Amino acid sequence: MNLEEKLQNLPNQAGIYQYFDKSGKLLYIGKAKILKNRVKSYFKFTPTLQPSPKLAPRIFKMISEVVNMNYIVVENENDALILENSLIKQLKPKYNILLRDDKTYPYIYLDTKDDFPRLEITRKVLRGSSLKYFGPFSSGAKDLLDSVYEIVPLVQKKSCMKGGKACMFYQIDRCLAPCEGKISKDQYSILIEKALNLINNKSKIIEELTKKMELYSSQFRFEDAMKLRDRIQTISKSQIKSTLDFAKDEDLDLFCVEQTESKAVIVKMFIRGGKLISTSHNYINITEITTIEEIYKTAMINYYNSDIPFIPSNILIAHKIDIIEELEQFIGDRYSKKVNIKIPQIGIKSDLIKVALSNTKELLKLEKIENNDTIYGQLQQLLELDKTPTRFECYDNSQMMGQAKVGAMIVWDENRFYKDDYRLYNLEANDEYGQMREMLTRRVERFESNPAPDLWVIDGGKTLLNLAYDIVNSAGVNLEIVAIAKEKIDAKAHRAKGGAKDIIYTKDHIFKLEMSDKRLQFLQRLRDEAHRSAIGFHKKQKRKEDKQISLLNIKGIGEAKVKKLLNYFGTFETIQNSKFDELCEVVSKKDAMLIVEYFQNNK
Image (cartoon, helix red, strand yellow):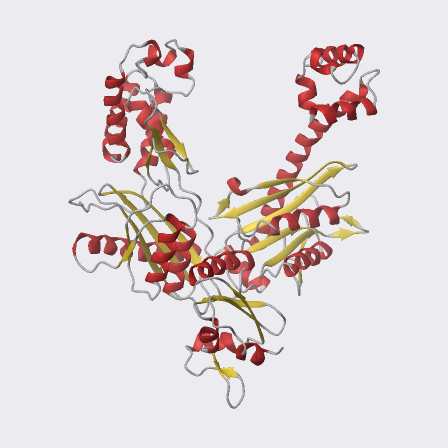
C-alpha cells in the first residue's frame, strides 16, 4: 500500500503516526485524537499528493520529505500522548525534540509513626499514610539534611536506637539520647518541629551554620569549619532567587519556556507552603519545526509521568498553549487528582512568571556565551551531524585470554564526565566484535527508560562502526555514531611516543587529524576514559574470578565437586562464608573440613 492509499484508509480513532523519508529514516512522530483528521490535514490530494499549502514553511519542508507513514491505534488521546512520548525517547526522530528524562528529584521525608523519627532522603516514592514529604529539591538535599542534623540534636543514625545505649553523638551534644530515655517523646517532637521549620528556610539554616563555623574556627577546628563553609556555599547556590512573598501557604509547580533558533530552555520552579524551595532547568536542542507548545508538552509529560509523592492542585505556565485540557487530563488520571494549569495575568503569580521568564532569557544568554564556537559545534561541522552534540556515550571492552570479559560505557554531558550514568557490562562473547555487539544491543534495549545520547563514540574502526549502525538501524533509532581507532602500521596499532595517531571514522568519511587538533583530543579523551573504566572493571572481575578458581586448587576438591557446591549454594561467596555443617550437606566431612581450613588460611 502506497502513501496515498494509507492516508485514504486512516481510522477515526486516537493513535500515533510516524513519517518516514525515502531511505526509511524516521522523520517525525505525532499523536492524534482522530488519526484520519490529523494526518490528512498535512496533505493536499489533488491533482496529486503533495504537502498542504496551508502548512507553515518549516512543516511544509518536512512533509515534502515524507514518502511513507505508519500508525498505531490506541484507546484514547491520553494513551496516545504517553505512547508518543515513549517512542520519541526510544527512536529519536529527526524533527521531534528530545528532552532527557529529569533525574528523579530527591525528597526529604519523615515517618511519623516512629516514637523518635529521623529525617531521611529518598528518590523513590515510599507508600504509607504515616510518611510526610518535603521537596522536591533539585540540588543540595544532602547538604540541607546534614545541616539540619548539625543544628538540631535529633537521632543521628538509624542504628542509634537499636543499641539502647548513649553513643558518641550524645557525648558531643549532637543527640539527647532518647535510646536511654533521657528525652521524652513530647520533648523530641519539639526538636522535630524545629527541624521541619529549617528545611524550608535556607536563610535560617545558613545563619545557624555560620555561627557554628565561627565557633569551630575559634576552637581551632579548622577542618570542621571548612566543611561547614562548603556546605553553606552549596545551600546558598540557587539558580533562581525570588523575594516574592506569598500571603498564604500555597503549593505550586511552575514551568516556563524560552527558545532561540537552535536552543530552548525549560525552567521548573517548586513552591511549597508559599516558599520557593527549589528550581531546575534543562537545555534542549530544537529542530526546525519545534514549537513552544511541544516543549511544554514534552517537559510536563516527562516530569509527571514518573512517581512523585506530591502534586499541587495548581500548575503555572508562562504561555498560552492549545493542549492545556489534554495535559490536565493526563496528570489528573495519572494521580487520580484534579489539577488546573493556569497562565496568571495579574498578581503575585504573574510576578513569579516574570521572574521565571527573565531567568530563562538569562540562561539562554549564558548558554550562548559558553557554547559559542565550542568543541561541540566544531565536531558537528567536521562530522556533518544533523544537530550539535552535547551528550556523548563512549564504549570499550576488555578481556585477557577469554577471562573476565567486560565492557564499559562512559557518559559526557554538561561539559563533564557524568559518572552517575556510567555502565559496566559482564559479557559472554569471546571476540571483540561479539562483545561490542552484545554491549550495544543491551544499551539499545534500554533506550525507553534511558534515551539515546546525541553521539555514540566507539573504540574501534570501520567494522565496529558498521556494527553499531546495524544495531541502531535495526531498532529504528536515529543516532549519530563515530569510531576512533589507532592508526595501523604493518597490521599493528601505531603508538608514537608523545601521542597516538588516531583515525576517526564516520559513515561517509575517514579523518586523519593532527595530534594537536582539539576535536581529535576531545574524542581521545572520551575513548581514554572508556578504556580506563573498562580496564578497571576487568581487573576487578579478574581478581574475583581468580579467587573463585582457587577452589579448584584445593587438593581433593575437583571441578565436579565445585559444580555441585555451586548448584547448592549459588555463588562462591556463599560457599566461602558457609559453616562446616552446611558444607556437609553437599560434600563429605573430609571435603568440608578442607574447604573451611583453606578459606580460614587465605583470609
